[in-house]
Length: 581
Ligand SMILES: Cc1cc2nc3c(=O)[nH]c(=O)nc-3n(C[C@H](O)[C@H](O)[C@H](O)COP(=O)(O)OP(=O)(O)OC[C@H]3O[C@@H](n4cnc5c(N)ncnc54)[C@H](O)[C@@H]3O)c2cc1C
Image 1: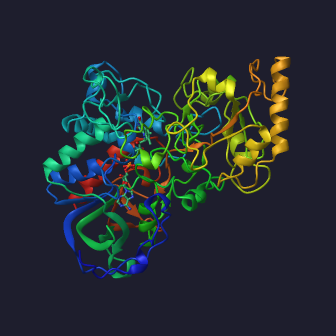
Image 2: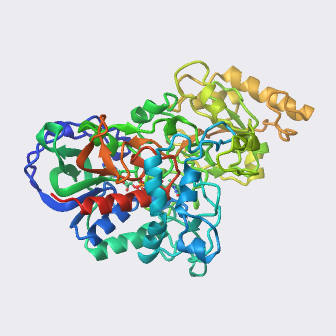
Image 3: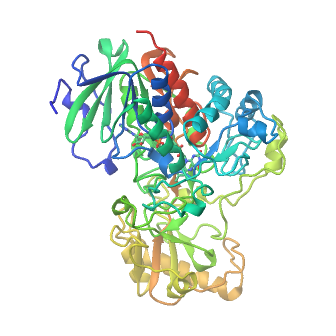
C-alpha cells in the first residue's frame, strides 16, 4: 500500500499495541486520500457497530476501521447485560411502568448516593441524558431487529449498574452459537439461548453491518483526525496505520469516534485520578482490545474539549474494583467466563487466575507487607433498601458502608509514589489444598511476575520484589511480622486489627505463595465534550463540524456500559448520515 502524504510525526513508533500510550499527534494535511466514504467510524464495539449500521441504513456509504484483528471491542467480552428502559417493548409487554421522563429523572437524580459517598448521577449533563432517555425505546427495537436475541423476555435488575432505580430495565443478550472470545468455544446447544454474553450482541450486529454494506477494515488503527484549514474547518477524515503502512481515509460527511475510552492509558487516566499509576495494569476487557485514549487524544489535537470529568474521579460503582481472579494480570471479577487456554488471545493473557472461594484462606498485603482491611469483605452492595426520587433521604437509606476496601488498597503505599502499589494475596500450601488450586501455569502467571512462591516468608518477600510494579522491595521483616501477627489472631480467634470474623487458618506450611490481587480498572466515564447529537465540541462549546463521538470515549454521562454506548452510537450515526455538505 502506498505511503501517502501523511506526517510521520503523527504516528507512534515501535511500541506493541499492548503498550500503546498515544502521544498528542500532529494532524496530517488533508487532500491525499487512499479511501473515502460519507461516514468513517472508528472502533467496532458497542457504539461503533450501531453507528455504522444506522449511518448506512440512512443512505451514507460507511467505512468502519478497527485496530484489532476482530470486531467487538470490550462489548464482545462483556456479560451482555443491556439496561435499556424508558418504556421499551419488553417493559410494556411485561407490564413494567417506565417512560423517557422517568428514565431521565433517574439518571439525573442528584440524591442517589453509593455507600462510599459517590453520587452516581449528580454530575451528568442534562442535555445528553435527555437525548439518551428519548432514544432508549428506539435502541431496544434496533438491537432486536438487527438480530440480538435475549435470554428472557422480561427485564430485570441484573447487571444494572448506574442505570436508574425506578424500574427493571436490564435485558441479557444470549450467546447463541458464537464461540466466545475468552474461551475460544461456543457453549453447549442446550444453553445457547439462556447464557448471556456480549458476543451475542456484537456478532449479530457485525452480520447486520456487513449485510447492509458497511466496509469493515480490521487491523486499521486510527492515528489522527484530519481537520481542514489548520484545525479551524471541518473534520474531513482520518489517518490510519495498517501493517506498517499509513493511509488517509476521507470522510465526506463525518468521522465518528467510538474508540472505547481511556482506562488503559496511564497518563490520560491520571488527568482524572493521580493515584492510577502503572500498577493498575489489569484493565477489564484488555488485552482483547485497549482503552488507550487514542480517540480522545486525536480529537483534542484538533481542538476538542473534555467533559464531565467529575464522573471519572468519583469511585463510582465498578470503575475501580477488587480483583476477582488472583495470580494473573487480568483479574476482572465478573469476567464470565474467565480466560481459557483455548482462546486465541490466551498467549496475551497468559493465565486464567485463581478464584478465591473463601478468604479465610488468604490475607491481602500492600507493597510494604502490611494488611489493610478485613479480607472477608466484598465490594459494597449496590442495592438500595428504599428509593424515593430526588429525596435527600436516599443517602440515609443507603448509609455509609465501610466495607469498601479501595481507598485503603490505593492509599497505603508505604509513603512512596502516588498509587497504592501492588496488592498481594498471601497464603500457604495448606490453603492451596483447601481451595483445590493448581499453582502452576496456565492457572497462575509466574513468568511475568504475577505469582511467586518461597520456602520461607523471607524468600517469598525477596521474590515479590522482582515484580516490576513493586516501587520498593517488599520488606521481609514487615511481611514476616504481618504473617506472625495474623497467626496470633487465628490462635486468639479474633482479628484485633481489622475485625476479620474468627480468622481460621494460620499461614505456616511451606511453600508460601503471593498472588497478584491489585484492583482492576473498568469504565471510562468522562471523555470528549459532545452535544445531544453526539457532535464533538471545542473549548468554546462550538461544534467541530464533521466530528462525532459515542461510547466510553464520550463525556458528560456517568452510566456503566453498553446502553449508553448503543444509544450514543445510533444518535451519532444518524446525525452524521444526515449532514449536508
Ligand atoms: C468483562 C466486561 C464485562 C462487561 N459487562 C457489561 C455488561 O454486562 N453490561 C454493560 O452494559 N456493559 C458491560 N461492560 C462494559 C461495556 O462492554 C463497554 O462499556 C462497552 O463495550 C463500551 O463500548 P465502546 O463502543 O465505547 O467501546 P468498545 O466496545 O470497547 O469498542 C471500542 C473499539 O474501538 C477500537 N479502537 C480503539 N482505538 C482505536 C483506534 N485508534 N483505531 C481503530 N480502532 C480503535 C477497539 O479496538 C475496540 O474494538 C463490560 C465490559 C467488560 C470489559
